[in-house]
Length: 357
Image 1 (tube, rainbow, N blue to C red):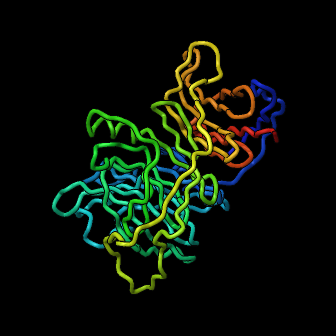
Image 2: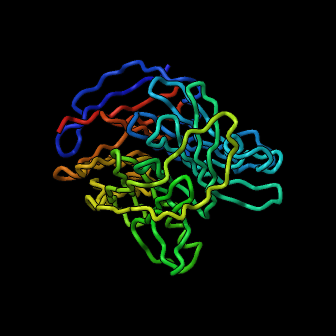
Image 3: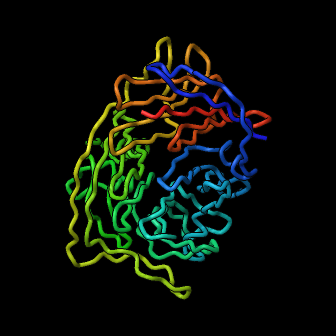
């Protein structure tokens, strides 16, 4: 049984104003992956995406997948070997899926993946695929890129990807917008890096969230900044209808010029932790943002020598914070609050609910 501690956030310090215990059902599989979570993200439909290691792959200790936890508690795990054509991945390996996002069209998704091929070469790609209502997977296209990580949905079935793929002039960006044909529509937030490795460190610290139909938020952990953008891609190459006989294909760029533009909605610092005393909260478990500039950041770290989770709310007056009583393994943000997963013999959840502002 999972026990949920509900704490209502109130006032500037988010002091608990009410405690109650309620029962909450989560499947055994959901609990397993949350206890192994390396990171967790969410989308506007209420689904959570958990990035975790894959056990039992002797030839590939670094094997990783993403498990989708749906609002009804059921799960689905994505492996790179399931999304790529048969024979793509070296025998005995499954590759890595770093992140998955649903696209504009129902049942279509995009995933960032990495794998070692049969020639023992390391490869990375954004995979566009379909999963029907019976959970059958069918890959549409594979866009090979370098150094990829986070992903979020853009407008017109585009994907916003954290990718270490500098432009010809050597300029780097935190995020790149592309479609299923491999067309690079545009980039967001430029930065300088001395070499590929330093640029990769910066890209690895980026988190992306879809916050509206055409809006995305970028969390840059290096600079402790969140930025929101509205994207326009009216004639992007969409995802045509695919049939069970359609084979996966390598993306081919279109010769047609694709219209793309962007509008920055806001930029906000999340450097202020809002807590006193000796503390260090270097790891961000999850974050959310609204078009109106409201931001929630969940961090894991140490306060006065004890491991704690810190929830910070930005955007409406002073920073409001709450510190957990327990060590959290993962955090699940939804429209009403945050659930922290406490790794004990009897898995426990600490629930923080937001006041309506």
